[in-house]
Amino acid sequence: MYAGDNNQEYIMLLLKTLDEFKQFCQQNLLHELQVFEARRQQVRVSVFVSISVFLILVYFLIQFYKYNLNDILSGLFLFNSLPEKIVILLLFTWMYIVAFFMILLAFTLFYNAAFETFVSSFDTKIIEKIFDFINTNRSFNISITPSEEDKEYTLSTLCNSQIFNVLFKPSYIKHDNLISGQINDIDIMFVTIDASIGVNHYWTYIFDINYLIKEAKSKVSETFTEAQFIVLIPMLFMLLCFRLIKGIPFVFNRVIRGQNIDYQRFQVEILRNEAYNTHVFKGLFFTAKFNKFAKAVTIIKPKFFKANIHSFLDEKKQLVKLEDPEFTKYFTVYSEDQVEARYVLSTNLMAKLVEFRKKARRNIYVSFVDDIIYIAIEYPEGIFEPNLFRSMLSFAPLREYFETIQLMFKIVEDLNLNRRIWKS
Image (cartoon, rainbow, N blue to C red; front, top):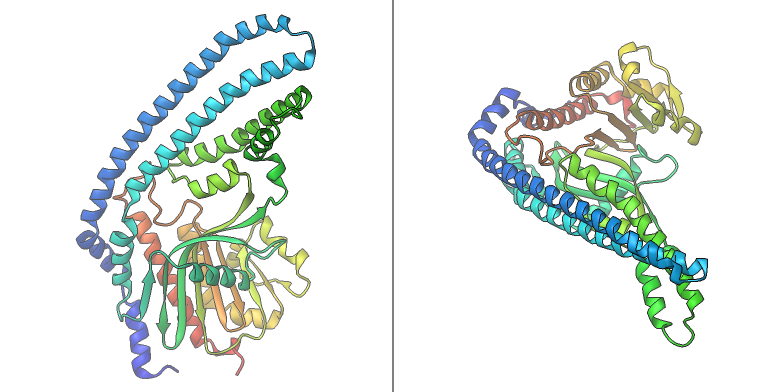
């Protein structure tokens, strides 16, 4: 059992009710949220105006292209060879595509700057106040902008959880609002993360527009022949088209959803084509380190196809068939030990996971590895991530964040009392 004082301290942390949190939000957050809502509406108007300007510029660009294309086509008879005619036509088209690309880049920069104005100081004015409400016994610390060391540690911890280690491990992570501390000698950490698998294109410099232009400039001499120029222009044309095919969905998928454009990622993936990132997980990641060790690795995943791939890639873990039909409706369980998995999945734990899954409709991942429990709750649109098309005055995301943290603390409490799953 817990010591009396420690037990009381732990329970006090969990005594916060949803009604208390709602009252806290009304008294402490409403004014700040109203300020952010006013900003959101102003920025939304600016974005709509910029979209209109973008579309008008693109319209006139297309009209100019059509108008001048007839002159170019009528002048092609001056050239005898077919390659020369093709190069002239591609060069003409390439100039207009460059102009379109510059308009797109200008729009991206404006949208990104406008969005940053909207969300400026959101974390410090909103997240920190919520943290103070949760941090009743002052046993936690918060880092709004974690360091590179924290980033590496979080990525390592995510990989150690084995939740997302299917074909490849996550290799790139963005995170913020790192909260860590202790409850009854149990190390707690939860952080908002966006994890992906990154593939660096070490060979793509030969397909880089900047590289090709530099090479062309270095060879502008007697050795730079007409034949080389004829080969270079189609390559530049195809590379620019490739950038647009990647860049247009990258930008407008985020604009349509009212989300910020990650300009750093835009530079790496689109402008320089140095890497490709496949999204793995976005949401809240939680860990609790106990002073005891689990006997075997057990992983709980949402019941969908990607989760079942795990059984084919890890022979040590077996599919655990449980008798609870409601739990198996939402989750799939793999473990190195069938018996221990049933000890880990107590009736209380399964009930908490099912209740939260039904209420929040979020994918939940849980794993037990050595002395740590890992919990990942998916928020594809971000949790507390400001959105241009959603009111800042909605209580729903605040409630969801509060209930998510309460769930994690209650799971830790349940596991700390469940001594059957731990080594002595």
